[in-house]
Length: 445
Ligand SMILES: *[C@@H]1O[C@H](CO)[C@@H](O)[C@H](O)[C@H]1NC(C)=O
Ligand SMILES: *[C@@H]1O[C@H](CO)[C@@H](O)[C@H](O)[C@H]1NC(C)=O
Ligand SMILES: *[C@@H]1O[C@H](CO)[C@@H](O)[C@H](O)[C@H]1NC(C)=O
Ligand SMILES: *[C@@H]1O[C@H](CO)[C@@H](O)[C@H](O)[C@H]1NC(C)=O
Ligand SMILES: *[C@@H]1O[C@H](CO)[C@@H](O)[C@H](O)[C@H]1NC(C)=O
Image (cartoon, rainbow, N blue to C red; front, side, top):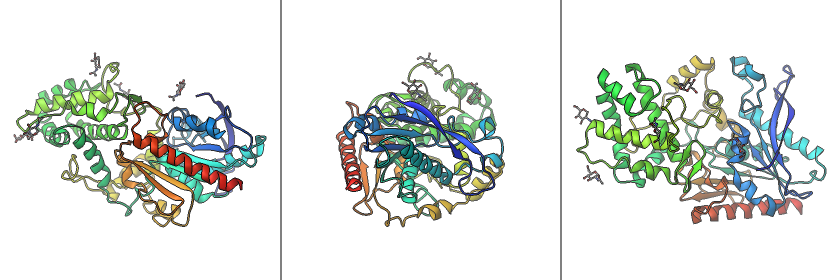
């Protein structure tokens, strides 16, 4: 994609008057297909480098010409190059204090206002917010909080209800499990059994060494690393479910088409399998995720996805406003039973950042389940995507529209069209476009 990279000054604190510093927010702009007064598709950047989201949001590039649209991708503060306190931004809780969704939304609203004021012919351009995942939550919230700034929003795979007391904490991992269960014979069963096999094998020094070599780990496992090893595998299965796309793609990692099916070919065991045979299968399976290109020298348990994501910043956000309870029971899902403990989470947050979560704030600030009075938002979700658990999957009104994509993983609809796209995503995109064009038309009357 061809775009201009720009930056604009924003207040570090939009909501108080004591800290009056400014910071540089990066955004990307393409007016290649834009016609004067034509719409602006505004991507509300999420937790990472904006050029990476731009590269993975082909839908906007696919429709720009037909819509005569300008494309803007705005970077979220504290990610990529938009660091309010430069290299020091993450150095202490005082500097991190301005990393909130409210501040990010205000940055976006101010940027839209200033673009419309400064670009000739954009004064009357309707703006549609577009985003995926946390970016999708921001797109929906931007429409809710700043209805005079954006005409509507396409919120793809946006788990706006993944907060405390809004959805069952086990749903997320249930969906992960269902993906594996339907992608190969005995696949989820083998993963469920692997946890005990790990306990068995890791109980001896020789077993630990075997595991480390079998998985090609960069650093040999010590007895105290076994919990991290399990957590790493669990995260790997989650990521695979999220990016179970119908074609070869490179989002979190470079992967083959329908990667979960490929993974499952290594996990077709019956109950007579030995612990080491089973774990050999697991190692082959995770290498589909970490070594599809064959270029991994060793597997680093600290690197589970692309470096373009701002993992630490997102963890801080989860530790403050974005508290998303998750749990497993080992029965309806393929993981080891683990209940949700706010106390344990809060203590971990305090240790890491010196802050504690406010678990009910997000539902207070953004309306919880009572959002029916808003308008012009599309909530799209894929049945394969674990984040569907916190998504809006039933329409709430004529203009709060839910679209479910049966063969879709995490915001598949926002990606470039592809010859392997299933009919369901082709239809979803057409419907999305139809709603967006209707909102624009209503605005221009
Ligand atoms: C985005 O795509 C461009 C052009 O293909 C590439 O140069 C750049 O490295 C990509 N950025 C990221 C963060 O992946
Ligand atoms: C682990 O060890 C126990 C006790 O020896 C055994 O019953 C079990 O089959 C082993 N493997 C798994 C996957 O449970
Ligand atoms: C799946 O597991 C069951 C129960 O252990 C076994 O009977 C069956 O042969 C397995 N299927 C395959 C394809 O391994
Ligand atoms: C990754 O794949 C290549 C090519 O098959 C292989 O040589 C290498 O050992 C693999 N890396 C790991 C960590 O298994
Ligand atoms: C593993 O990744 C972390 C985080 O990127 C890095 O600091 C560390 O050096 C890596 N370890 C190895 C052995 O490559």
